[in-house]
Length: 322
Image (tube, rainbow, N blue to C red):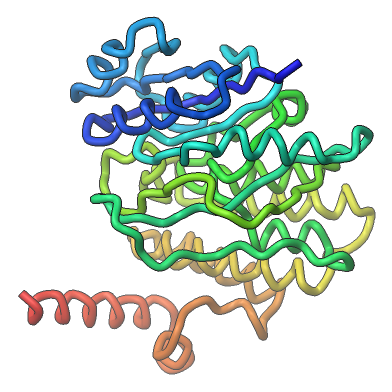
């Protein structure tokens, strides 16, 4: 029997792109599929476009609650053995599902594993832009360190619904980067991520306040990512029964620093300093994230003034370019 695949599309104010996203799901060469669109309280014409597809898709709408809750609702509605998440502004390649189901069939029957491919990065017009290629885990590489450093984007994996339900789906508290948390928890639950090189979908990269996965880092509190990273640290230690491996400490320290910079740019100085402090405690030598001259500016002036100087320089360059 051919397994049923559920394609879940969370939507918020995506009238420019939702039609193309749904059409890419409907047009999949894999026939045994269901498409579930979950509208997250859109105020534009997204819901009207969703309804125009009639009984070719299932859909639901509700109040605006964010991408992770919409994805989890889609997971509740899904009947498929396998799950493909697709954001409303992205596009599945024609043979994405067929190719990944074939790859799944090659996995050992007793293995707890999922497959994932690569994202083709495009701009808002669909034109290719430089991307970030994924690297498969090496045989001797720590799977935790690998998923932290080489986490696939949301639509890269073909998930097994059973594994998603086992860990409770997406964390609804996180305003951004929910796939990083989801994939880490899957690995900690014993799921192996098997990489198959090759594009499976187009990921549209742009900055827009209405994008369902582009909320401010501080939308649900400036310390939300701090608490999440602390939780990840404890989960990893509990799962392994050991202190953090050096490579894991390095990656987590850089996450603390990265989120600290993001929070600092949103005006949370005291909270950002807590991120930076924990980053240094984990790995003082490798924690700083940022290309030159940022590290030099931090050493000379501190994190707050360094960030301010960089932002002022960027604003100046933009104004002179106009």
